[in-house]
Length: 70
View 1 (cartoon, rainbow, N blue to C red):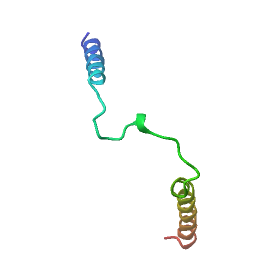
View 2 (cartoon, rainbow, N blue to C red):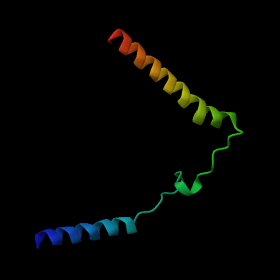
View 3 (cartoon, one colour):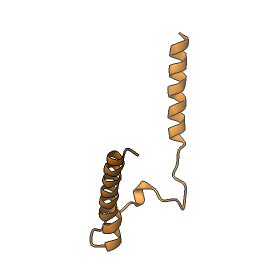
View 4 (cartoon, helix red, strand yellow):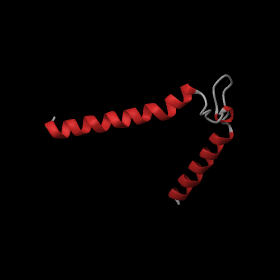
């Protein structure tokens, strides 16, 4: 019986917490998101070029460490 009471009360409090949640003003939120503009060079570098460079550097570092037992 105690387990059922704990489950019901925890579900009740989780529901209340989500009911009172709100998005603060002057803070970016998901409703303000815009799609990535691939014609913008900064977006292209940030979302495409940099991750590829980090992956390549990680693989080179991993192979160097594996080869030299570091």
